[in-house]
Length: 421
Ligand code: ATP
Ligand code: MG
Image (cartoon, rainbow, N blue to C red; front, top):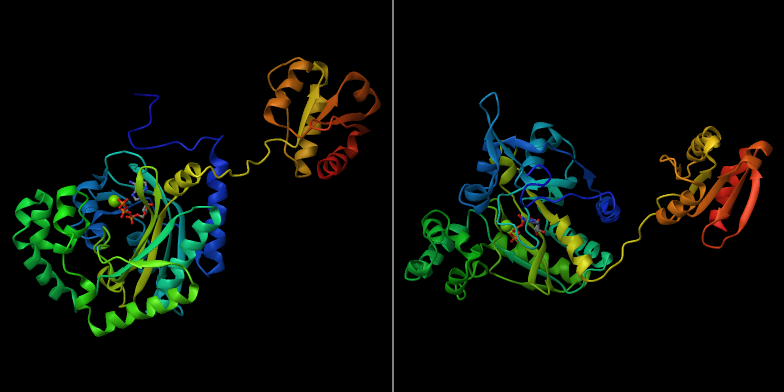
């Protein structure tokens, strides 16, 4: 128990974190290219925020939240998604007074959902997410889809498909709810108990049910796209116009509704096929009522969330090698009594911006070389008695075996020259 991480959580080990850092750097770059700046919001929020924001008929709110009372008897919930917190901070900070749009991203945000852990499904996962407030044009929806597509493609993810849909707005959706209820009426008997509850309160949710028997029943359900109001239809047409300009392939899938209640108009998913079936890497959409719903002015929003573990899983699955940075440029090897000069040399190398270290475990000189080799150090810098007596150090390139003896004071420059040779 003590040495076992809780079910559905995963450590990122020091031997593995470079893979995260590589993907994160690409994500930051993609966000910056489109004018998104980073926001960091707390890991927990008042439970009320998610009840209102995410919607109390969603699986997330009904089954998956980590909610607890703090010592002050407040109900607190660990973030089950990224958008509500971003909206809360947007409203609280008064950023809505600035010229719009307001673009922000979050990276590595831990997300908590009490789910059944399985491949690609964790209880704590991490998301890269973008939110754009105050822009109603479909050009932003398209920019986000394009950004996610290019990012994933650039990382080497293959077989990406972009699926889009529109789920309308409070003006046209009630008519669809009615249509859907009519269609589901005779079928709901064969569906799961959760869907029976959804049927009354939010029939759209039924389309998102993961149960096989329910999916079977909704195969031929009417499409929201047939009943969109003029404004929503025009917006969806605009989205497609912009997507066509990007040249990326996309599919309209009227089954996509997404697992969060706040969406209006555009919803989208980026899906890949893996050996275990389809995997959604990125999901998002427009939420034109959410800012107001959470106590802010009436401003539209649109965004997406991308699961970082899933991105890494896909890269793994496709055998994409992420370059591993070198642990040490220079490893200082020394005879036991020369620990002082060795220690000083290490500091001198580090001050010059080189990655350097020495033995801290009383190894023999031979064992130090062996250890340096294991760490993949590019160079060794040896301080034997002769070297110390003469104020020099012997640098050796571990790959080419090339050696050079230089004054200790010149060690950093000489090491750098050897590294760059
Ligand atoms: P799914 O349909 O796979 O349950 P979702 O619709 O619940 O996904 P979102 O809430 O849109 O997912 O979250 C955005 C992204 O976060 C997903 O596309 C996925 O990459 C990732 N994600 C969601 N839930 C998990 C999880 N439990 N473990 C790992 N990654 C997840
Ligand atoms: Mg889910």
